[in-house]
Image (tube, rainbow, N blue to C red; front, side):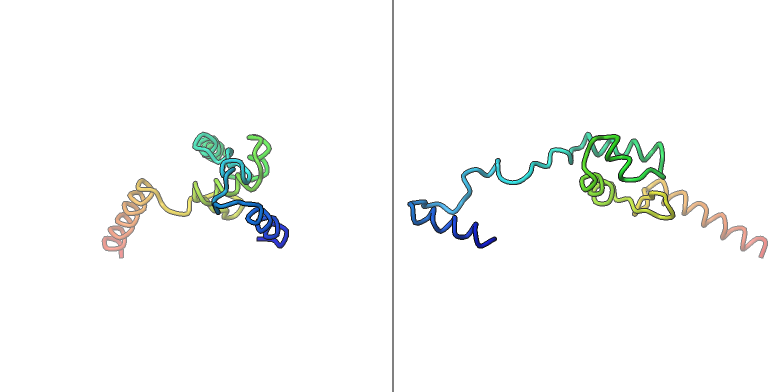
Length: 114
């Protein structure tokens, strides 16, 4: 808390304020209206079409801030950038099954062919 805010709070208590809670809780701070499920779905749809798209291009296309798109991509959708391409951080159930089948195939080839 800054010195000015602390002084303002002290003055308000000296003037008769009795409660610590903020009366304007809904109005304080910047609203996070751009981090919605619909925007997350729109970003996911863009990724499905083109994995090489940049965060800046998505932000300009959806008219959202760079920081919000970055948060949606990295924290909500859990993608990371590898060699100029967005890839999921964790494997999906389908990817795990495919990986398991490939591993079993390679293991059978190794035992049969040597």
